[in-house]
Image 1 (cartoon, rainbow, N blue to C red):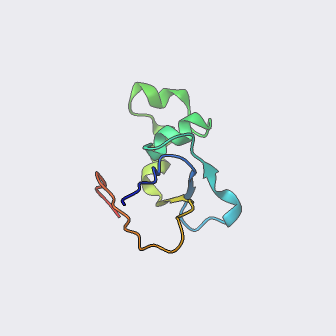
Image 2: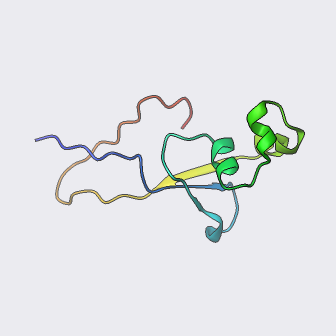
Length: 87
């Protein structure tokens, strides 16, 4: 019998190479880096209006996402990623 685990919760984000303590919880996925940083007040509100010079640093950085979840034991599993444009 097939079972599915939704991976829309328990995600975190950090700038690549930052210490383990820098992981930021993400409220829900999918979400883009700028949306997450704006929600956490790490970007100015002007970002919502369009181009904002104070936010240019975001595009110059590499970012890492991670998600932690439990899988049922004793079975083979397949991770299917639909709609991703980058892995």
